[in-house]
Structure formats: structure tokens, C-alpha cells
Length: 251
Image (tube, rainbow, N blue to C red; front, side, top):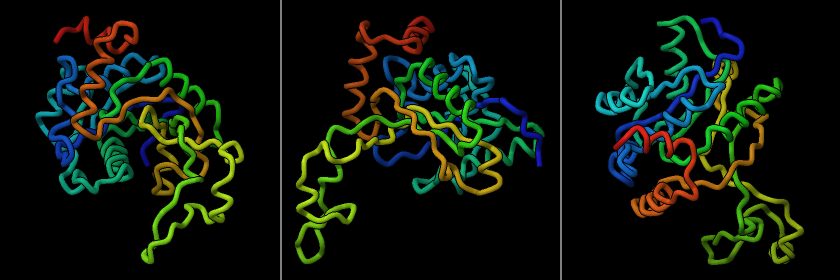
């Protein structure tokens, strides 16, 4: 096993080239810069992150990532770069490559998805501080509160009747919203993973996932999401450190 260096933190930005919903969305220009640049810059502006690695199957994506300061020490195999590729697969590939070729592994990985471009490095650092303060945790994942209460939602059975999502009665599901616990939706703002846990358990998140509440953010799934993102980027009242950096960078 390669040596896991305590408190060493790498960011990993996964950016496969195939995208069925929005073609090449990871490098689609947002206010003059490719989407992937926002995650790279956010990681580089986070004080606790020592290295930013982009995991991609595309030589074109790799060159773009390097332009914005990321390391691309390998290209991800096509076999784990399809639409059904999992987080565990690209994480294990990155760990295995570093173990074989460099011998040193980080204790923590800050996982930043390119499809969530608008982040505050201070929030990422706060998440990292939470993770490092809790040695019993397996991982951390960001989420924000949902406005609607999913405990009151239904699914429709094959015979045409509504059923509740969590097994409570239909009458219980009709109770006041205040009777149900607050529910959070994962949003891709920041995930933090542990090398040792992944290597030993072949899982990414485990059972002890720190509940990190982050600001609500936009995760790009459809082309229409870009227009909303553009408005935010151009709005100087909501300008953050990453946007300021990229505007100064040019583009």
C-alpha cells in the first residue's frame, strides 16, 4: 500500500467527455470560461487544498484543465468513463494510479463536480475543517434544505393507487408539514472522501457521512440552466472570489 500522508488534501474534479443531456457540458463556456475552470479555481483558492487533479478521458479536456492550473497526471480509461460510470470507479482509479506511480496518497479528497460551478472557497474550507475535526467520519457531503416535504409525496402503484414513499399511512402523510423532519437534498457543492476508507471498504461514502449544510446552488442538468448561471455570473452583487478571479484572468 502506498503511504497515506496525514492531513494531505487533494481536490479531484471528474470530467468525462461524454454527456447525453448537454453535449460537452463540462467544457461549455460560462461567461467566457469553460465550466470545469470554475471548480479548478475554487479548489486552488481553498487554502487547505494542496493539489487539484482532474480525472478525464479526454486529451482536449486535459489541456483545458492544465491551462487553469490543474494537474492531469493520467487519462481515465474509457471503460469507466461512460454514462453509467460511478464515483467509486474514478476514485479507485485515481488512488491506484497515485499509489503505483507516486507512492504518496492524500488522506482526504475534496470531490468537486464541474456541473456545480458556483462555489465559495470559504465554504469548501469550512467543510474541510469539519471533516478533519471528526476522525470517526467516513465522508462528508453537502446538501441544502428542500422546500417541499417529500414525506407527503406519493408514488402510483400498477393498479392505479397512491402509496407513500416511506411506508406511513396515507392519512399520516396528510398531516402538518411541521410534524415531519427537515429533509436535505445533496447538491454537489462539496463532497469530502477518505483514501483509507475507499481502499479498505470499496465504498465512497460509508455509514458515517457528515451532514454539511451548504448554500443552495445550481447543478447543470439542462441547457436552460446556463442562462440562469450567466445572470448570476454577470450580477456584481453576487460576485464571489472565483468569479472575480476568472474575470481578472480574462476570457
